[in-house]
Image 1 (cartoon, rainbow, N blue to C red):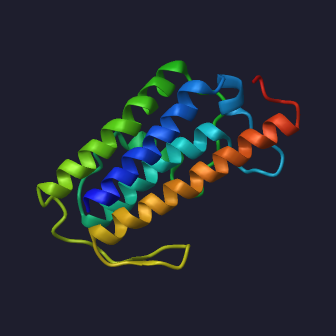
Image 2: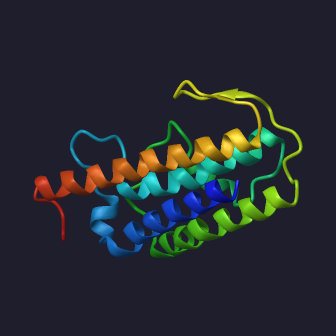
Length: 159
């Protein structure tokens, strides 16, 4: 699983780089053709990791449930995000990756409720969830890159 955790850390570093090096305006603008903004996609990764790994294993979230309720699947972007929330998100990107690895190493996930994702993949245990979560976050990273290109193409970007 070390390989999968290394991949997760890299995806999170990529997301953090976007969060820290993209203007607030660009983070919060919803480009034409998209349902959400860059910021939502990043925060959504945090929420879904908690649901896929902690909720389905019968454990408490490792973050405030605000993040899960606000950014889970089916939610929509808030365009009025405070700077303090952006700073919290930056922290959570790195810390929740570290905590997941520590929890996995400490056998924090002995039980897991099987789950079929909307992507058509069946998760049977925490290992499946971690591997799928990496794919899920990578998909959202791709969305984010497309959103950045769309903002530039629309002349909306402040780059």
